Structure formats: C-alpha cells, structure tokens
Length: 149
Image (cartoon, rainbow, N blue to C red; front, top):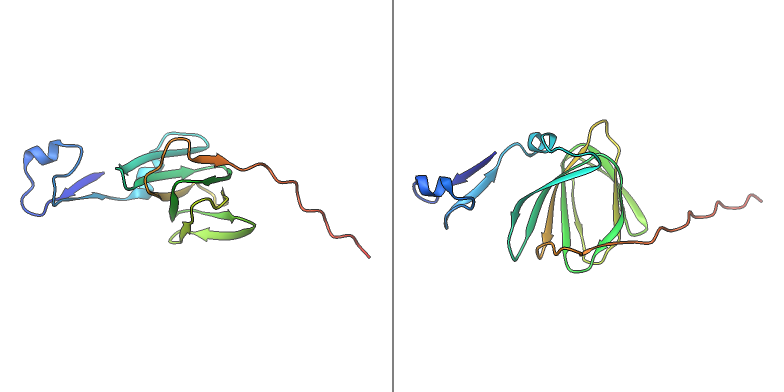
C-alpha cells in the first residue's frame, strides 16, 4: 500500500502520479503483508523504488538463493519476517526478523530460509541494481572430514 506524505497539501494530481511530487515522501505500509501477496514459487520480488542512485526491492524467499556476488553494487538486506542462514564468504550467520546486513561489493553471499514461512527481506542496492550484476559463484566441493587418529 503506497501513501504519499506531502510537504504541504496533497493534490489530486500528486495522488494520480506514480512518483511523489518534490518535497514528498512515499511510505510503504506493512511490508510483510505485501510480501505475502507476492505470487511466486522460489523467490519473488517487487521493486519499491528505483532511480540512478538506489534500487529497493521487497523479496519473499521460500528456498535457497545460491552463492553469488554483485560487482557494481553494495547490497543492504533487512530481514522483515522469518529467519534464515546467510553465508557470507566462508562464514555463516543466522538471521532473524529485525536483523540488518551490509554486504560489500564483490563479496560472495548466499541465503537459505529456515523458518516455517518465507523469509521476507527489504533489499537495497547502492548504486542501483544493474541487470547482469548478479554473478554466480562456482560451487565449491564440500570440505573433507577430518581423519580419525
């Protein structure tokens, strides 16, 4: 649900535009509920905002997202609902609703939802997401088990 909060009075013209007038802010309400309404199987997203400086997406993730990196953008992820495991380089971190992660440019990362429902994320790319900037990482062989003595 998009609402516009004008600096002065909200005109009918401004309400009809897809972008708020200068001096206004767009407010997205109840993002977890909006994500539940997204239609998709593995991962579904909708762009909430995009310009030359930034892209902001709402994602609903139901199955693992493979290891990848972004060469041109930094990614900021805020987990709105659900939980999951973020693999960041060689390390792993469990995330829960309310956690925020800043993923530096060119850092390999993957995400696996672990809760009963989908993980709902607010994802921001700075600068804006450029098509083709999601570079898959080659699969790594599993680490060998330590030998018993």
